[in-house]
Length: 108
Image 1 (cartoon, rainbow, N blue to C red):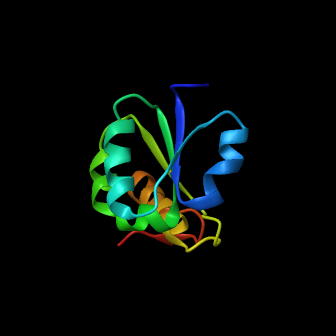
Image 2 (spheres, helix red, strand yellow):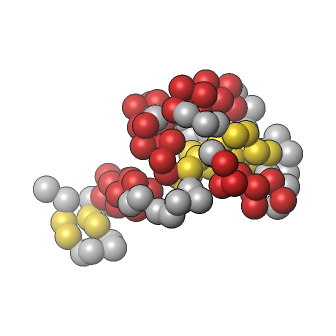
């Protein structure tokens, strides 16, 4: 799996993924996470990033989502979910399908 999947996160958030064979990159702040994401986007197909950092890198992630790779997946941090990932998932589904299949609301 090396070279295909990575995780960017703070603290202990990355340890479980590292134990599972995912390349782990700790980032203590948004600036470091932004630098890592730009670097990792060149070599990894899937990059997990903790929600707290992803929310601060929303502009960069939005631009990167216009390309097929890497797939950037926000995940809860050691502090739990913030709702960022869920909101992004709903927005992407609405854009792709024209309807919110989770809450059954049509896009306006």
